[in-house]
Structure formats: structure tokens, C-alpha cells
Amino acid sequence: MHSIRCSTPRVALHPIPRRGGFRTWHLVRAGGLVLSFTAFGCREGPTDASENAAVIEVTASTQGQDVDPDGYTATLDGAGGQSLAPSATVTFSNVSPGEHDVELTDVADNCTVGAPNPRTVTLTAGQTVPTTFSVSCAAIELIAFESDRTGDDDIWVMWADGSHLENLTNAVGDDFNPRWSPDGTRIAFGSTADGDAEIWVMDADGSNATNLTDSPGDDVDPQWSPDGSQIVFRSDRAAGEDDIWVMDADGSNARNLTIDAADDFDPRWSPDGSLIYFTSDRDGDLEIWVMNPDGGGEVNLTSDPGNDFSPRLSATGDFILFVSDRTGDNDIWATSSDGLVQVNLTDDPGNDIEPRWSPDNARIAFQSDRDGNGDIWIMNGNGSDPTNLTNDPAFDFAPVWAPGSTRITFTSDRSGNNDLWLMSVDGSNPTNLSSSAGSDTDPAWRP
Image (spheres, rainbow, N blue to C red):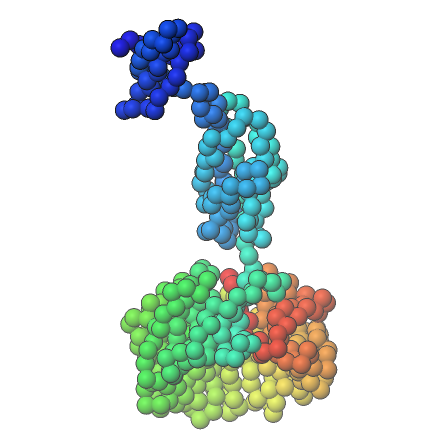
């Protein structure tokens, strides 16, 4: 047996099947003589295309807030999509030389890809070409709310323009009173999923829902401490009376702060977390009380023969708004944090309730029927310049400020059922955000 070079033979060669990785040839000469040759290390046919192929490395560089953890899809020439994490690289191998289009798709609505997208990448044989897409993501304004549009009350979330509606709970039982954690990553809420009303918490996307209280009584109205480490709430688990309880944010260390025979409810933290304000009937009528977070140092702030309720604190904690009927009808009052100075801000024959400080402390939104039906009003922090913002024959109620102090959400039945509406601070541009056949209430803006 003889060896030949891996080149085109000068005589007739007839290949026979490959054996053991070698190639054997039969050489036929004149006269019928047949010689066998074995070629070692030869490669038959044309050069493998992969030798001339190129590689594209596609990188996403993402900055901003509310980045979609699912990332994007990178495509080559409109096909061959690969999942690409928000800040990662994927590789397209064995790409033929020439011009190719690379595109980043499946980009979240709050994110923008730097141009060009798609872009053309030119390749030469054997080359590896990187290309990077810069992605910027803006913070999403989210509103959590309660809705019975699917039958039971559930916690829903939507963008501030009413889009991207999503049912977060979608479970048996009623879910209500959504409250965002200070860092916007979790939502506390009330639920009857386990039979009675309990305080639950879930991640902002509805995952990891957990019953924090799991007691025989009703536990409702969760309020996060400013640092997010505790939740204060109302419970009737002790002897049937409503008391103010507090627990750690994971549900541990629950304790009764107001052990008495009266009803204590509507707790609110001071902005620095050093005090808890609440309403109590322990003195025979409703009054605004304050205590330390451990339940000590209880003080009656209002101490008036009328009913005083619904404490709402300014962003600085210097003043507390509340509703009082001490003059015969419900008016909006303000008191200093020590209760020494109390002022009637509305003093109108109508019923003025649901006061809410603007985030910048400059104005107060409230609900009033002074014009004959429920409307949303606004006034300066000292009670001056009261203005009817809605002025609609329908019932408009429960104002809630949006972050930035330039917009107000409210609930209205002007479309036939309760929907969530948004308007500018001057009452212009009223927009129905939820627009469903169910009842949508209790909006809560993510911080």
C-alpha cells in the first residue's frame, strides 16, 4: 500500500467508503491493474463553509428604572431570535460574510432603544463583530386599586394613563385596601381569602402573596411605617373591640397597642415614624389621639364634645387634618401636632370630608356636597380659595394626590358605575382611567 498527497490525482481514482477515518482509493491503470491507496488526514470536497463564517456578538446595556427582568429578543435578519437579558450578550455564530440586519425587539413600553434599531452589520470571513444596544428605561407611574370587575374584589394595578391593566390577586375571596410599601416593591392589602379579613402582603407583581396576620378576628387597614419595617393595622381579635395593632413587616411580633374597651381605628404614622395617630371613642365621642409606636404616651389631641375623626398628616408632620362635626355639620379642621391650635378650614353648611394634603404641603383636596352633590374641591393649606374641581352632576369622591402635586385621582359614578378618574390640579383634563363595568375604588399611587 502506498500513500498519496491530498490533491487531485492524475489518474482515475475511485473512492470506496470511509473506514476508520481514512479514505481509500482504487487507482485503475491501463491493462486492468488495480492499486489501492489510502490517504491519511485528507478532507474531500470543497472547503467547509464554517471556515469563512463570521460571528456577531449582540450586547444590551440597560440603564434606568423599572427594567423588565425578562429583557429583550435579539434577531438576525428578522429571524433567529435569542433571549437577551437587560445587560448581557448573546452570540450569532456561523453567519455568512456580507451585510446583516440586527434588531432588538420585545422592548418594554417604558424603555427606549438607542438608534439605529435595526442596524446593519457588515461581516468579513472569519471576523467577530460586536454591536451594543443602549437601552434607557423610565420609571413607571403605577396605581394599585380595588375592583370587582371579575366578580370578587381583587387588587389590580395599572399605569397612570390607564393602560397595562393587571389583576394581581385573582383569587377566591375579596381583596381590598391596597397599600404600597415605602420603597414601592410590595403591596399590603386586606383579604378574606382564608375566611375572615386578614392582612396580606405581596410583591409588586402579585407574586409571593403571604398572610401576615392569620388570626380569628378581622384585621384590616394596613399602614406601612415610613421605613417599611412595620405595619400598623386595626383588629377586633381581642374581645371584639377594634384596637390598633402593629407587627413587623414579615408578620412577626404582632402586639396590641390600645388595650381598652373602646373602638380604636384609622391609624396613621407620623412622617418620621415616631408617633401613631388614630381615632377613638374611649371618651364617649370620636376624638383624634396620638401615641408612641409601642403604645405608650397616649394623648387626646382634640378633646371636644363633637366627633373628630380621619386624621391625615402633612408631609412634615407639623399639622394634622381631621373631620369634625363640632359646629353641626362635617368640616375640615387642622390642628398642630400637639393639639394646642385647632382651626376650622372650611366652615361651610355642606359636609366636607376626606381631606388630603398635597405632597408639597401647599394645598388640600377634599370631598364636599356644598353644591348639592359630591364633588372634589381644593383649597390652600390655610383654607383660602376653595374651588370646585369636578362640578359634575355625578357623585365624585375620595380624592388622592398623584406624586408631584399636579394631578388628583378620584372615584366617580359619572359613567354609570364607580370608575377611577384623573384630572389636573385645576380640574382640567378629566380622564376615566379604569372604565369597566365593575366598581373600581381606593386608588393608591406607587411612591
